[in-house]
Image (cartoon, rainbow, N blue to C red; front, side, top):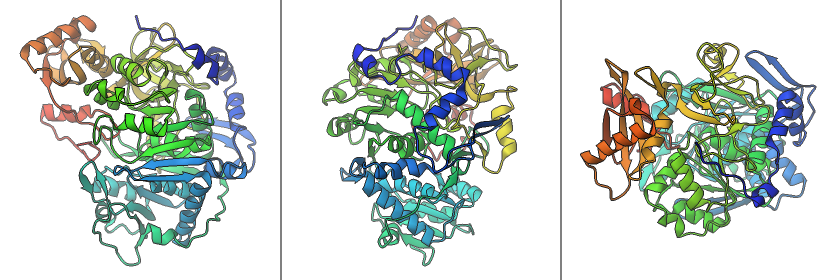
Length: 621
């Protein structure tokens, strides 16, 4: 039986939505009416003639409307007198600070937008952005959107080959990068990576370079230009381009475990409505909030909930350049104290990494400004949830455990602050969203049983297609189970209608005919007092089909012994069942993770089975 945490009277009093069930029921009865109501809270150049055109599996939202996401991100705040409000607070890994009011941010965006136009960038051109977490990363994205160019942000940890693939596929006209940056103690030579990646690609006309590390770089005459030189004499007046609601805003590449990265296309109108509604209602946004999302704008979380939604809502946002736990495990907590952060959104992996160093680190800092916490990226195990709730939120702050994807654009399943919370559950679908658990034949599975998580109805911020590949879009997302969007995640639903995400379907293990989600098994390991983090994989087994092997990180000071391995096997047998008892346990000091915090189980599996590990360019270490 799951523990239930009811919202405090204070949280309930301040909640935007006090009765989820009533509004959810209304939103499902008439989703178009619900989304139209949300859309009317935003500013449009010209209204829509029709809310939704659904020609399975292709959707169009707010048909006939003219808009631009930047009109809501910046223009309307300037017009309404919010220009002097603090929009962006940035701190570098070196402690340097930069601040921008909404007017100052607008000026910077307009200067770069005019600079891009001077370089010949037009509506529909693709711009690749390969920058570390600097204000210029956000400014570059906003400047592209302002003039109708399509940005393709490539995470700054990607290899030359990964960047080259994305530049080639998008037929990029301009690349925006930095000379270099420091990640912990290491100098990353970004300009050098871009030079190699762009070599011989004819579409690339210019490379714009932000000064950050002041390392030596090659500047190619006529092609390369310093960012500060480009924007120096540019006007702060730049008209925001009027776009169709269905005009592309960005391409974002998301790779599966194999095959060519998928180029997800999101558009101005519906995407804007979806991310605005979710951030506002799930995180109960108020005008005095200081928002801190620890993601990188190179991922969808950073697109939706750093670059766009917080500014659409007109709040102040904190943005940090450095990695977590550096220079010490108290870094994030010190930033929350210093900048009086009210809403904090991070990953389960980062929370588990902090747990490893003990509660004494957050205890050094005043975290009383916090009102709501959030997680994203993968399921959070109940033990990490409890630690987060106890030691970061001090039992005051509800945790919004959000499930969504690059493809969905916005948060899809999540609690609201006014809801009872179950540690480890993403709770219920957002308004207008119909989610279900099905088997591979499209039958709804019984309550409590695992199956495939699917979405049954269209939503405004859904991907419109895969760039230049409608056939793959149909096959990957709509071809697995007829009539529904296939998320690729395994999940189950309990008797209260709460969803429990079990991990990617290709991570689900089948042992002697029984299905186990990696999240369930890893959570069972972490519930042991000696364990801080675990990853499990399946290995071929001639009798069981698959056998379970676990890679386990122990808490500091715990000795790695055979007795402890046997104790852990017995613990899993007790917590999950005798079939789930692992064949092997290996104690490790680290796990292969992306810099966004996801465990790369495929790398563990490939190494274990002696197979090629594939592209490791997104790995943290």
